[in-house]
Length: 282
Image (cartoon, rainbow, N blue to C red; front, side, top):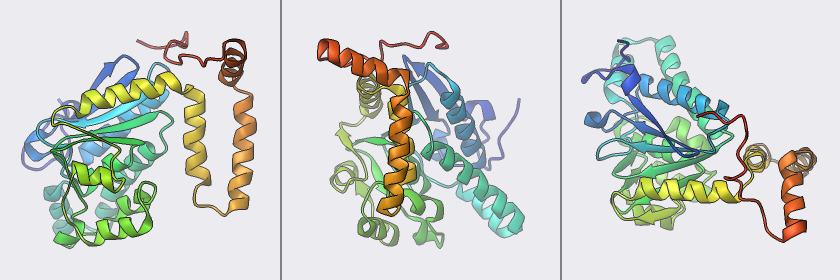
């Protein structure tokens, strides 16, 4: 049996992340509950690999991230971080950081809809993991915070995409003043999207994913996510040029032709969950 490079409780590599299918949704559950599901090298690697499998699966329309046990994720594996900081060299630190970089890049650039279902703590990198998703469903019992500066660390990777979700000044306050926000407060500032009762986040995340997948053409959703990644933040002329190219590309998609034809003929839009690809995998 293969084991991940964890300190403390040893979790088998193939059990550290649970992968399950709910219809067209792939649910990835961080499964190191005794340690509040830290983003250890093993966890980050497993997440990256699972996200890539979801990307390649024609039957997956959305990816849901959740945490086993009482919490979503407590962020960095501090025991592993201490070992690297005290006994490792720059090369070891760089390798560890690159594992997280690759995972976040795969998640941020993912072509499928991504939804985080947050119960309990989403702290530091765990908060970043949730807010890197397209949507965040939070329970009232959730706790969000970027606490890195409290232990002399910095919110390096997560800071690069936080302003995709909240304004620059809100991001600055979150990163410099590491207060704990409950689920209701997170929704109020835009850090999360929907508020539910404790224990209901995953069910609501699945419902939300199905609702969006039913309304949105898979290729159009992918193209829109790509457009947002490429155009937002650029000068208006560059953004307009990128948008025009995306416009042309999507007009050539068969789903665009089907959507337009359906609307012209019936004044309705397709049920995109019913428009299954014949190549769909089980």
